[in-house]
Length: 370
Image (cartoon, rainbow, N blue to C red; front, top):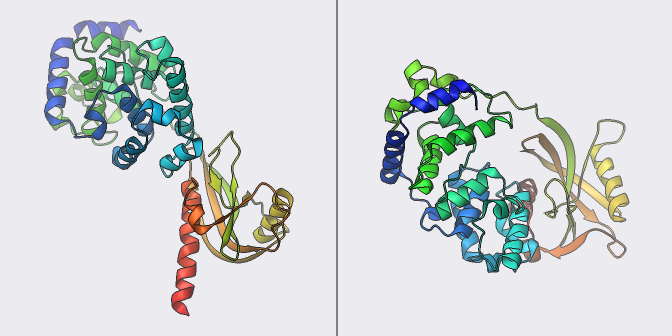
């Protein structure tokens, strides 16, 4: 830790800060389902779901997930497709796969008890320093730091820390800060209070400083620089990819494909699709050739029914959506034939859920027109 920051911490009124922060949290905290219990499994699931996802979005998913998999054993014994279906629409599906794998390990190696040992917990798949600290502090009342973007933003303002929070090494600085100021008596409330403060008061833009319970301890507020902190360099630009997808039918059946077990949206199901490039062949023809090569079937591709844009953190899919018909399905490979009722059992990424909705609207509009 830098000498200047050490001097700030030496002068910082730690006990009063803890009292003000925790007192505010206990009085004002939101009523969230995962706060009703300190069950480490529930804390774990909620923290994984909350990564890069809004609280309002997570609440119904968390409740449904807990209804379906109420214990470590229930989730460990579930099939991956079942877990992905329960996660469908929440995004960042590697979180669900890693959680499932780690819960299996807890069930097999630790008798279904989430370990309270930092080393054991940190070795589980998908548990990084933040999640480890959150579980240990919230569920087990162990004074471990749980440092995410919210916490770095709050503390950069409180202690006027001008390090770039986009750099991985900066997290270490904030972890050391938390080690110095965390409440040893109530680390659970302390860490949750920092997170709550960042979510509700010390927001990224236009922080509500006049409502802040620890305003008198905030160096950025005192200096009038709260809007300039935290320092955060911009992420790399998003790459755009042009794609074509087809809702492929034959009679009452649909034809769907399972994505590879590694990489983006691994093991999720989708309608046949491919990346397309501008050139001599139309998107229709490129899609038709792809399906012939990949699935060994001939198809007729009909009208364009619309386009969908789906934005990931690092790329954007611009998808042209077609309706098509398969000519003969006896020799096909790498593709599954399902009826519409069966279609509902498979987990699809949001982009392909939108494709299905677009297809249904098209058919309903045609039916009403006739």
